[in-house]
Length: 276
Image 1 (spheres, rainbow, N blue to C red):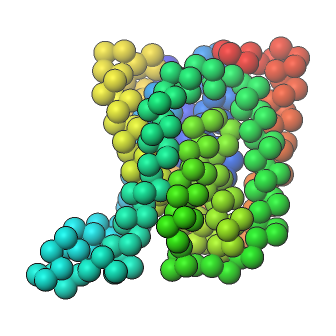
Image 2: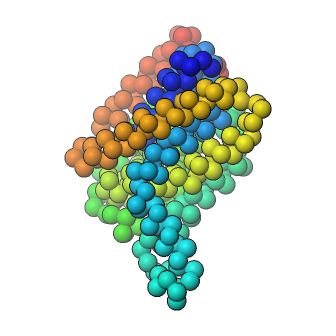
Protein backbone atom coordinates (compact mmCIF):
# COMPACT_ATOMS: atom_id res chain seq x y z
CA UNK A 1 0.00 0.00 0.00
CA UNK A 2 1.38 3.38 -1.03
CA UNK A 3 1.38 6.68 0.86
CA UNK A 4 -1.65 8.04 -1.02
CA UNK A 5 -3.70 4.91 -0.35
CA UNK A 6 -2.65 4.94 3.33
CA UNK A 7 -3.77 8.56 3.78
CA UNK A 8 -7.11 7.84 2.10
CA UNK A 9 -7.65 4.74 4.23
CA UNK A 10 -6.78 6.72 7.38
CA UNK A 11 -9.24 9.44 6.40
CA UNK A 12 -11.94 6.85 5.79
CA UNK A 13 -11.29 5.16 9.13
CA UNK A 14 -11.32 8.45 11.03
CA UNK A 15 -14.44 9.75 9.30
CA UNK A 16 -16.50 6.57 9.70
CA UNK A 17 -15.44 4.86 12.95
CA UNK A 18 -17.76 6.82 15.25
CA UNK A 19 -20.65 7.31 12.87
CA UNK A 20 -23.25 4.53 12.57
CA UNK A 21 -22.21 3.74 8.99
CA UNK A 22 -19.53 1.02 9.55
CA UNK A 23 -15.85 1.89 9.21
CA UNK A 24 -15.00 -1.74 8.38
CA UNK A 25 -17.45 -1.65 5.45
CA UNK A 26 -15.91 1.55 4.12
CA UNK A 27 -12.35 0.25 4.45
CA UNK A 28 -13.47 -2.93 2.70
CA UNK A 29 -15.13 -0.98 -0.14
CA UNK A 30 -12.31 1.55 -0.59
CA UNK A 31 -9.76 -1.26 -0.46
CA UNK A 32 -11.65 -3.05 -3.24
CA UNK A 33 -11.66 0.16 -5.29
CA UNK A 34 -7.88 0.27 -4.91
CA UNK A 35 -7.83 -3.33 -6.11
CA UNK A 36 -6.97 -5.09 -2.87
CA UNK A 37 -8.72 -5.83 0.44
CA UNK A 38 -6.49 -4.30 3.17
CA UNK A 39 -7.53 -7.15 5.47
CA UNK A 40 -8.99 -7.46 8.94
CA UNK A 41 -5.58 -6.88 10.56
CA UNK A 42 -5.16 -3.48 8.88
CA UNK A 43 -8.66 -2.49 9.98
CA UNK A 44 -8.03 -3.58 13.59
CA UNK A 45 -4.68 -1.76 13.82
CA UNK A 46 -5.93 1.53 12.33
CA UNK A 47 -8.77 1.47 14.87
CA UNK A 48 -6.11 2.00 17.55
CA UNK A 49 -5.81 5.51 16.15
CA UNK A 50 -9.48 6.32 16.43
CA UNK A 51 -9.79 4.76 19.88
CA UNK A 52 -6.84 6.87 21.04
CA UNK A 53 -9.00 9.85 20.07
CA UNK A 54 -11.76 8.46 22.31
CA UNK A 55 -9.23 8.11 25.14
CA UNK A 56 -8.31 11.77 24.89
CA UNK A 57 -11.86 13.08 24.39
CA UNK A 58 -13.26 11.14 27.36
CA UNK A 59 -10.05 11.30 29.42
CA UNK A 60 -11.68 12.83 32.52
CA UNK A 61 -14.44 10.20 32.57
CA UNK A 62 -12.10 7.30 31.79
CA UNK A 63 -9.43 8.26 34.33
CA UNK A 64 -12.09 8.75 37.03
CA UNK A 65 -13.72 5.39 36.29
CA UNK A 66 -10.39 3.55 36.25
CA UNK A 67 -9.12 5.19 39.45
CA UNK A 68 -12.30 4.52 41.38
CA UNK A 69 -12.51 0.95 40.06
CA UNK A 70 -9.11 0.18 41.58
CA UNK A 71 -9.82 2.17 44.75
CA UNK A 72 -12.94 0.08 45.37
CA UNK A 73 -10.70 -2.93 46.13
CA UNK A 74 -9.50 -1.09 49.25
CA UNK A 75 -12.71 0.66 50.46
CA UNK A 76 -11.48 1.29 54.01
CA UNK A 77 -8.48 3.22 52.76
CA UNK A 78 -10.05 4.99 49.77
CA UNK A 79 -13.63 5.42 50.91
CA UNK A 80 -14.79 4.17 47.50
CA UNK A 81 -17.08 1.13 47.51
CA UNK A 82 -18.44 -1.18 44.84
CA UNK A 83 -21.72 0.76 45.03
CA UNK A 84 -20.06 3.87 43.54
CA UNK A 85 -21.57 4.72 40.14
CA UNK A 86 -18.15 4.99 38.46
CA UNK A 87 -17.06 1.63 39.86
CA UNK A 88 -20.30 0.11 38.63
CA UNK A 89 -19.72 1.62 35.18
CA UNK A 90 -16.22 0.15 35.12
CA UNK A 91 -17.59 -3.34 35.81
CA UNK A 92 -20.31 -2.86 33.18
CA UNK A 93 -17.73 -1.93 30.54
CA UNK A 94 -15.75 -5.07 31.43
CA UNK A 95 -18.84 -7.30 31.32
CA UNK A 96 -20.07 -5.66 28.11
CA UNK A 97 -16.69 -6.28 26.45
CA UNK A 98 -16.81 -10.05 27.00
CA UNK A 99 -19.13 -11.00 24.09
CA UNK A 100 -17.01 -9.41 21.36
CA UNK A 101 -13.80 -10.69 22.95
CA UNK A 102 -15.01 -14.28 23.17
CA UNK A 103 -16.76 -14.36 19.78
CA UNK A 104 -13.85 -12.59 18.12
CA UNK A 105 -11.36 -15.19 19.33
CA UNK A 106 -13.58 -18.18 18.60
CA UNK A 107 -14.54 -16.98 15.11
CA UNK A 108 -11.28 -15.31 14.10
CA UNK A 109 -10.62 -17.41 10.97
CA UNK A 110 -14.24 -17.14 9.81
CA UNK A 111 -14.23 -13.36 10.39
CA UNK A 112 -11.02 -12.88 8.41
CA UNK A 113 -12.18 -14.99 5.47
CA UNK A 114 -15.88 -15.70 4.78
CA UNK A 115 -17.20 -12.52 6.42
CA UNK A 116 -15.04 -10.40 4.09
CA UNK A 117 -17.44 -11.18 1.22
CA UNK A 118 -18.76 -7.87 -0.10
CA UNK A 119 -22.30 -9.19 -0.51
CA UNK A 120 -22.42 -9.71 3.25
CA UNK A 121 -21.24 -6.13 3.73
CA UNK A 122 -23.98 -4.82 1.43
CA UNK A 123 -26.65 -6.85 3.24
CA UNK A 124 -25.58 -5.57 6.65
CA UNK A 125 -25.46 -1.95 5.47
CA UNK A 126 -29.08 -2.15 4.34
CA UNK A 127 -30.52 -4.33 7.11
CA UNK A 128 -29.00 -2.35 9.97
CA UNK A 129 -29.92 0.94 8.33
CA UNK A 130 -33.56 -0.08 8.60
CA UNK A 131 -33.16 -1.32 12.18
CA UNK A 132 -31.34 1.87 13.24
CA UNK A 133 -34.02 4.02 11.65
CA UNK A 134 -36.83 2.15 13.42
CA UNK A 135 -35.00 2.17 16.78
CA UNK A 136 -34.27 5.89 16.57
CA UNK A 137 -37.84 6.74 15.65
CA UNK A 138 -39.71 4.51 18.07
CA UNK A 139 -37.32 4.32 21.04
CA UNK A 140 -38.54 5.95 24.26
CA UNK A 141 -35.53 8.29 24.26
CA UNK A 142 -35.54 8.99 27.99
CA UNK A 143 -32.94 6.88 29.83
CA UNK A 144 -29.48 8.07 30.81
CA UNK A 145 -26.50 5.89 31.74
CA UNK A 146 -27.57 6.10 35.38
CA UNK A 147 -30.43 3.76 34.43
CA UNK A 148 -28.13 1.17 32.83
CA UNK A 149 -28.74 -2.32 34.24
CA UNK A 150 -26.47 -5.37 34.13
CA UNK A 151 -28.71 -7.08 31.58
CA UNK A 152 -28.65 -3.98 29.38
CA UNK A 153 -24.85 -3.82 29.63
CA UNK A 154 -24.65 -7.41 28.37
CA UNK A 155 -27.12 -6.67 25.56
CA UNK A 156 -24.98 -3.68 24.57
CA UNK A 157 -22.03 -6.07 24.50
CA UNK A 158 -23.72 -8.51 22.13
CA UNK A 159 -24.78 -5.60 19.92
CA UNK A 160 -21.14 -4.50 19.78
CA UNK A 161 -20.12 -8.06 18.85
CA UNK A 162 -22.24 -7.77 15.69
CA UNK A 163 -19.62 -5.29 14.45
CA UNK A 164 -17.38 -8.29 13.76
CA UNK A 165 -19.45 -8.47 10.56
CA UNK A 166 -18.36 -5.71 8.12
CA UNK A 167 -21.30 -3.44 7.41
CA UNK A 168 -22.96 -3.59 10.83
CA UNK A 169 -20.95 -0.79 12.52
CA UNK A 170 -19.70 -0.91 16.09
CA UNK A 171 -21.28 2.40 17.01
CA UNK A 172 -24.33 1.64 14.88
CA UNK A 173 -24.96 -1.71 16.57
CA UNK A 174 -24.57 -0.43 20.11
CA UNK A 175 -26.43 2.83 19.49
CA UNK A 176 -29.27 0.90 17.87
CA UNK A 177 -29.44 -1.41 20.90
CA UNK A 178 -29.42 1.62 23.19
CA UNK A 179 -32.25 3.29 21.33
CA UNK A 180 -34.29 0.07 21.39
CA UNK A 181 -33.78 -0.06 25.16
CA UNK A 182 -34.97 3.54 25.54
CA UNK A 183 -31.68 5.43 26.04
CA UNK A 184 -31.16 8.95 24.73
CA UNK A 185 -28.97 9.39 21.66
CA UNK A 186 -26.18 11.01 23.70
CA UNK A 187 -26.26 8.30 26.40
CA UNK A 188 -26.25 5.48 23.83
CA UNK A 189 -23.35 7.04 21.90
CA UNK A 190 -21.36 7.79 25.06
CA UNK A 191 -21.60 4.21 26.33
CA UNK A 192 -20.88 2.92 22.82
CA UNK A 193 -17.58 4.82 22.70
CA UNK A 194 -16.53 3.78 26.21
CA UNK A 195 -17.51 0.14 25.62
CA UNK A 196 -15.48 -0.04 22.41
CA UNK A 197 -12.16 0.86 24.00
CA UNK A 198 -11.15 -2.45 25.67
CA UNK A 199 -12.13 -4.54 22.63
CA UNK A 200 -10.58 -2.25 20.02
CA UNK A 201 -7.27 -1.77 21.83
CA UNK A 202 -7.01 -5.49 22.59
CA UNK A 203 -7.84 -6.43 19.00
CA UNK A 204 -5.54 -3.81 17.51
CA UNK A 205 -2.48 -4.72 19.57
CA UNK A 206 -3.19 -8.44 19.12
CA UNK A 207 -3.29 -8.03 15.34
CA UNK A 208 -0.18 -5.82 15.45
CA UNK A 209 1.76 -8.49 17.34
CA UNK A 210 0.47 -11.22 15.04
CA UNK A 211 1.36 -9.20 11.93
CA UNK A 212 5.01 -8.59 12.85
CA UNK A 213 6.97 -9.67 9.79
CA UNK A 214 3.77 -10.41 7.87
CA UNK A 215 1.77 -7.26 7.25
CA UNK A 216 0.40 -7.26 3.66
CA UNK A 217 -0.37 -3.53 3.77
CA UNK A 218 3.13 -2.66 5.00
CA UNK A 219 4.00 -1.19 8.39
CA UNK A 220 4.80 2.28 7.09
CA UNK A 221 1.40 2.58 5.42
CA UNK A 222 -0.39 1.07 8.41
CA UNK A 223 1.21 3.50 10.89
CA UNK A 224 0.52 6.47 8.62
CA UNK A 225 -3.13 5.45 8.21
CA UNK A 226 -3.44 5.02 11.99
CA UNK A 227 -2.03 8.51 12.65
CA UNK A 228 -4.40 10.09 10.11
CA UNK A 229 -7.32 8.14 11.62
CA UNK A 230 -6.49 9.54 15.07
CA UNK A 231 -6.47 13.19 13.96
CA UNK A 232 -9.63 12.93 11.86
CA UNK A 233 -11.38 10.71 14.41
CA UNK A 234 -11.00 13.25 17.21
CA UNK A 235 -12.62 15.98 15.11
CA UNK A 236 -15.48 13.63 14.22
CA UNK A 237 -16.15 12.79 17.89
CA UNK A 238 -16.45 16.47 18.79
CA UNK A 239 -18.83 17.09 15.88
CA UNK A 240 -20.89 13.93 16.38
CA UNK A 241 -21.52 14.41 20.12
CA UNK A 242 -22.78 17.94 19.46
CA UNK A 243 -24.93 16.74 16.56
CA UNK A 244 -26.71 14.15 18.72
CA UNK A 245 -28.05 16.83 21.04
CA UNK A 246 -30.42 18.13 18.38
CA UNK A 247 -30.48 15.80 15.35
CA UNK A 248 -31.76 12.32 14.51
CA UNK A 249 -29.95 9.43 12.80
CA UNK A 250 -32.06 9.75 9.64
CA UNK A 251 -29.21 11.11 7.45
CA UNK A 252 -27.04 8.13 8.40
CA UNK A 253 -29.88 5.72 7.67
CA UNK A 254 -30.34 7.21 4.19
CA UNK A 255 -26.58 7.19 3.57
CA UNK A 256 -26.29 3.49 4.52
CA UNK A 257 -29.15 2.57 2.17
CA UNK A 258 -27.70 4.54 -0.74
CA UNK A 259 -24.21 3.12 -0.16
CA UNK A 260 -25.55 -0.42 0.06
CA UNK A 261 -27.49 0.00 -3.19
CA UNK A 262 -24.49 1.56 -4.97
CA UNK A 263 -22.13 -1.23 -3.92
CA UNK A 264 -24.71 -3.89 -4.84
CA UNK A 265 -24.96 -2.40 -8.35
CA UNK A 266 -21.16 -2.30 -8.61
CA UNK A 267 -20.94 -5.95 -7.60
CA UNK A 268 -23.74 -7.02 -9.92
CA UNK A 269 -22.17 -5.29 -12.91
CA UNK A 270 -18.68 -6.56 -12.15
CA UNK A 271 -17.24 -3.15 -11.34
CA UNK A 272 -16.30 -4.55 -7.93
CA UNK A 273 -15.38 -8.07 -6.93
CA UNK A 274 -17.06 -9.58 -3.87
CA UNK A 275 -13.83 -11.25 -2.77
CA UNK A 276 -11.17 -8.76 -3.97
